[in-house]
Structures are given as C-alpha cells and as structure tokens.
Length: 88
Image 1 (tube, rainbow, N blue to C red):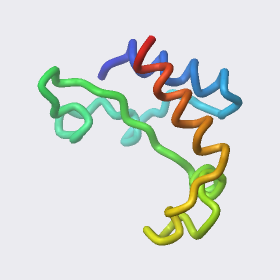
Image 2: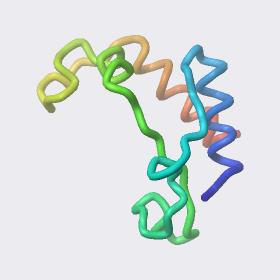
Image 3: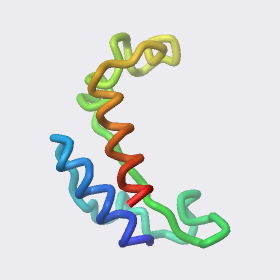
Image 4: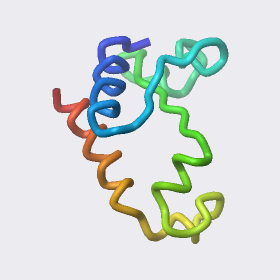
C-alpha cells in the first residue's frame, strides 16, 4: 500500500543488481489484512523472495534456521539496498 516506499525499494534493489518487480494478485501486498499493512501508519512494503534468491543470500540450506546462520556478500548487498531505500 505504500507505493512510494515500494518504488524506492524496487529501484534500489535493481541498482544493486537484483531483479525486482511489482507483483500482482495475492502477492501485491495491498490487502488491509496483511501484517505488512497493519502498522501504526496502515501501510508497508512486502517483499517476496524466490528460493534461488534465498539460496544466494546464505551459505547453508536457506530452508532451515541453521542454514541461514552464515550469510554471503550478496546478503550484505541486498540489506544495503533495502537500507538505502528506507533512508531515501
């Protein structure tokens, strides 16, 4: 629902070399029932990540908490892009 933040996130992720798109349908993040939009300002930015992206962010099995212990340089790049979008 926060299209300004959404657009900044997409822009910064793309600048960092990630594929980022506006999703539609059930993944659009626009429902008032979504926890993303149930904040004090009633809006947020929902990010859906593919399994291949998750695998690129961690050195272990990204489907387990133990596997998400060690991150890759790509994880740092991803986080920095999100921080830049939020601070923009």
